[in-house]
Length: 479
Ligand SMILES: [Zn+2]
Image 1 (tube, rainbow, N blue to C red):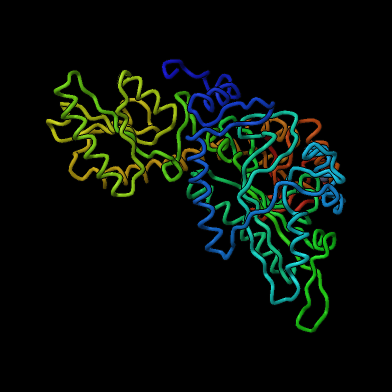
Image 2: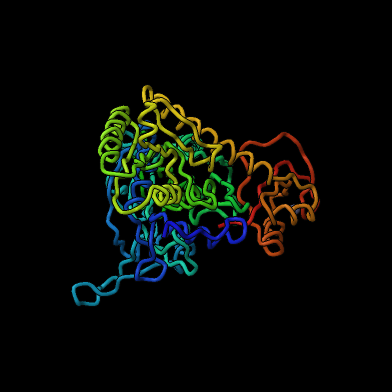
């Protein structure tokens, strides 16, 4: 397997992605169409993503909880826009224990409704607020076109849910969580993102305002990497989530929800990967450095393996996620290819000649070939490895940012927009009208990704209807 080359990324990006996911052993196709099995290496990556987010959620006062997967169907029907948004995607359980159920149950597509139901019991007074909760779970949406990690019938995510006494506080929470996602994407995943507000047409069913972070993939297409919704009082009115304010008046709560899913793994693959396979940002990589011992006979083997294991122990003690690849029956070259496919940031080669010089060869995954190789003294290895991991983290971010910027154009005219979205993003003045947005989608297949929060102060004319406009919107073809 490791000997076969992937399809070239520049020639068939989609097939490159599919094969990479399988061959890096991140995930596999499940027997049920559209479902995925996340393999241990892929799950280890997800666990690192979880840890990086969970730390941030807890630092901002959120607590984790668990809610059931089965939800009475009537719950979904309580909130009209929610029904419209999810009905076609629902999986419904009608038989349980051999009996037809009195009320069908749905497999949660998201948990707003069941949380709303419970909150209506738990929240009584302003003293009970705010409620700041997060769930790490799986949800089911009956998608027709699926792709591993990007869109599957069942996927893993976190869904945050909060309830507040005032609109202002809930809006602040929505923006705070968007900031947290952006910080995670940039700092841990080395993925530059554009935070913004969704249009009416693109927002979440049942939300008053939806925000997202948008990232550019290696083929120039957009991926919505996380969302944060200000739900207003839509769910609190549907589920009667009310509290008594200090004056003894009954008030509806203001709620939010926000999520990031295993689709983010797809973003990591598509932003950083190359023709040799995956390239993982060191902060999230399950294995940050792999040691490959090189020897020709048993005598060399004993000395090299002993030194390699000492090095492994020293790196592990310094908090580096390290693996010694002492597999028998495969050549060092085969191992190199295998770890390149899996995107391990650093490879340490240790052979008899290196040992004699008390050094080893370190190869950077982000710089294939000779360019990324250097000889490093064994003495002081932990410091050198830590520094190189930081350099790779930084360099991956800069490369992705440069790529995105080189494929993002300000487009004053419709023709320029049309051409820009063929290879990347277009930033264009937009009047706010749904018709103009719909026409762009219809004619170019690009959707409005978001109205970026950071705007270069200017005014211009809508790229479609030429009416005066104050804001630029971001357009791109999306996953
Ligand atoms: Zn317009």
